[in-house]
Amino acid sequence: MIYLYIFLCLIASAFFSGMEIAFLSSDKLRLELDRSRGGVSARILGVFYSRPDHFITTMLLGNNVALVIYGLLTAVLMEPWLKSLLGENDGLILLAQSVLSTLLILFVGEFLPKVTFRANPNRTMRFFAGILFLVYLLLYPFAWIIGLITRAILFLAGQRTSSVAIRPQLSSLDLEYYLTHSSDDGQASGIETEVKIIQNAISFSGLQVRDCLLPRNEIVGASIDSTRAHLEELFIRTGLSKLIVYKENIDEVVGYIHSSEMFRGDDWQKRIVSALFVPESMQASTLMRLLMQKKKSIAVVIDELGGTAGMVTLEDIVEELFGDIEDEHDRQKRVAKRLDDRTFVFSGRMEIDDINEKFGLTLPEDEDFMTIAGYILYHHPSIPSQGQILEIGDLRFEILRSTSTKIVLVKMTLPEA
Image (cartoon, rainbow, N blue to C red):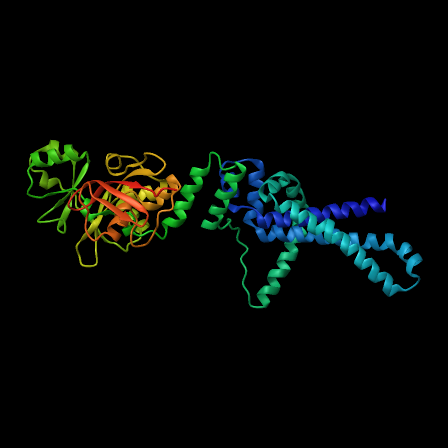
């Protein structure tokens, strides 16, 4: 019977050690996504992750109880055998008992379960969630007392601790880890979009207005002295629903006008909506709140000299969170096509990181330029004319369409392999 008890102690120690390492190694993002989808296991694990200190204390308590019982039983089991082998040398017997029992528990109760459970911690936590909850309820009163004593000692030592339940703290590294490993084991299916939205939300806090503005040379606007007929023609030709209105030039913006106002009479100037004027350095999240509070959809971005650097719409900011939202602007401004293995056609405004991600390319990225047009202009001092061919490094660019102020469409050819 003593062999059975020792075996059960080894199993208990292995279980507690393995669950401790599985808990610490588990993917917090996947837990949050599982919790949002419901399920008994997810709710149970949510309890554990909301109070990680209690869970770890419970696992350590269970493991220590198992180890103490295991040590006592192995001492009783090995003592007659060791006495017959080593005589009445109590010190040598104690040393032999310690070494043999420690080697066994290290391998069976520590090394083996930690290696095994760490291989797939989230699946392990879900599988044992029910058993864990029963053990947690059984040991929690003792763990709570130990935690109370620990907090009292820390308080006397001058360290404050919190007893408030917490949510797992997620970072972009958790997201990258989740996407990489989920794509390998096929578990990202159906929730990759959610992950990307969360990833965008994390990076959104550091996004500035300059990162999502439409440059001034691409703003379509009209003079405040324009006739209603001219504005109607401009709305029809561009397909836009709103136009920037300025006085003498684009640096003197007065607001914007909606296409629906064209049906309300010739005095359209009286219905101009004033725009917000914001600096390039403003946080995009701050601008988003301002636009919603003031019920406006367009903000004019001012550079350090007081001129117009560009404009930002509420849609531009939302796209940073949820990805591209196709509208009448986007159908015109972004083209990305692969003609063959080496040849591509891009809109000038296509961002290089999007091109690299979509086509698996390694075009150079730099803080001095974001778009393919910016890359060309970075290496070419002036706007190239339509039909002009440029060689930049081992890349060949043919300007398919350009204006006096911007590169509209470009064909890029990769070098031969």
